Image (cartoon, rainbow, N blue to C red):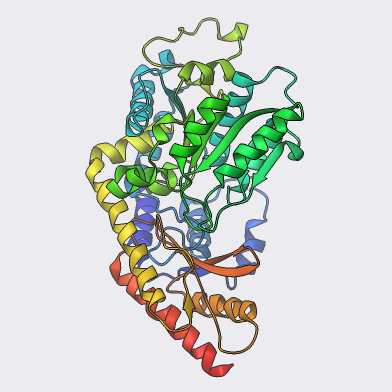
Length: 455
């Protein structure tokens, strides 16, 4: 069975450069087949694997070099091997004494992440299923650290460009939507700190309790980076928790350009990171770092008599005390193994390459007639649109996106900023290189020219 699975996986990865960037056509027959209940007696493994292979061929090719939509996730093969090993030995790591070596591996990963942001030795963190759960735990930690048990006067401040998972997390943490203050962004799509100052003052005067500001280290829409240093300076004077959502952009801290963009991030109280984005790992790999680790523990720890036989925390944290999860998979190996195998420099060089590729798209489209590229990329998202000579611009750009994606060599997504329909290319996959970006530029320009001629 393992040999059959490996044969499929090797072929799948080798075919990624030629596979469609997205393909959902004709999936109905497969979906109907997969709705069958489990059999009373088992099927041959190769028969089952056929269904997996068919499913892998339909959908967004998020592992391929042409996937430039949303925030790509490359899925390093070494991480898949790590998961195979972790699931096979099936050790429990959320209490360190149950698997000391594996718990240490996870603690080592967290310490490396903390060191990346110059966090002190007292910092702690957890590996999560993704940025949404990390944002949730961050908000719970801030709430329990700064607000009383009756916390419904607490208000938080987010940019109009902040990821929707923050608002969802706040609601799940018990806050009504009216407590979430959406702050208008400036012309460069950063949170307007002067407006935050005014809103905090007004809320205090109204008897409310401001407690949290969320800064973006790379928004999903455009990759914009808030002035984290200004936000931290303001928050210290107001006793506000600063949470940085770096789910998409945080790992650009490995590069010189990223460190310059994230100036002041070491002063944030907590940081969300998604290794399944900036470290190219499989989906389901997020993380949260908290500068004062005891606050993370106090926010999540509860006592249970049936856990009394387990060893107390020592040099290795009991991660169950820092997280909403008691039972979960051993996520640390899928981060640790690729780092050990490839070395940190490989990730740094790959991220630098992605910054260069985004710049190449920006410069090519900025120089092309008819294209509007409103925001210079701070990271690797390039938002753009075409301004047709006649007709409705939004309808033209919707048709442009459809035509670009019909090539099946690249797959882009869109967003709306203000009242403008915007196309966006996002370069994150470790499999995306200069050749595919040059092809994408040609496809984008040709699609616009063809539409303009037919208008």
